[in-house]
Length: 244
Ligand code: URA
Image (cartoon, rainbow, N blue to C red; front, top):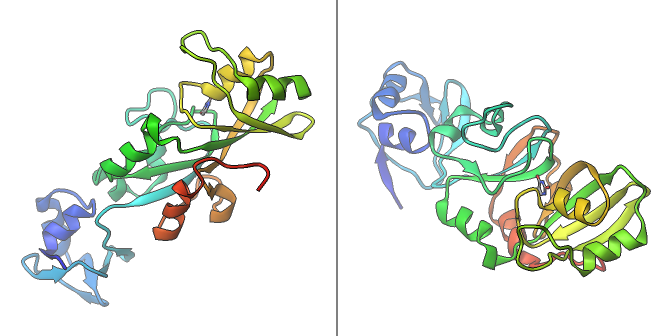
């Protein structure tokens, strides 16, 4: 159980500074149970709280966990330089409450991107020792060969890596394969493909741990909240097994 004054509650949910939140409240923009609450001093219980700001409904969340189907041409950096930033695809309160991508995808990579304002969650999922698997669909310029799949599975040496990096890989089309990695090195898939003698022309992340993008039913550029069950799926499969 936790009680906050209305201005502090709104601030915690990303609606701006205390002053800005008081302004919203006094302007009549905030409703609870369909009623305008114009006094920011009112204390409210945050557990299970739902509220409206400028007609949009929100549920109080201590932290947010989001999944986005990232389109191409969008950067994951907080200070994007060449393309729009991924946060521009989300409602503004998420940026103000400190939501950030969990790891990165290249600007031209599409697919499942998690975002959160929970630092411990981000750290746990991105920590190299955690081995949360990531599954990518790769389209290659040249037809896929069995030799390429074997090279990827047996280990590919990248210039700046101490040991060869191995993956699970399987062919899914003439120019398409799925690859499962447990690390998240810079341009890892593209560099592994290149080092194995191929060339990646399109890359899409289709799962993180046991959480498949397809199961979320998102449109390209669309996002959703992840609640307990999908969050558990993230770590439920330490390693995706193609035999499953
Ligand atoms: N590997 C890459 O090369 N790029 C990505 O965006 C993700 C993994």
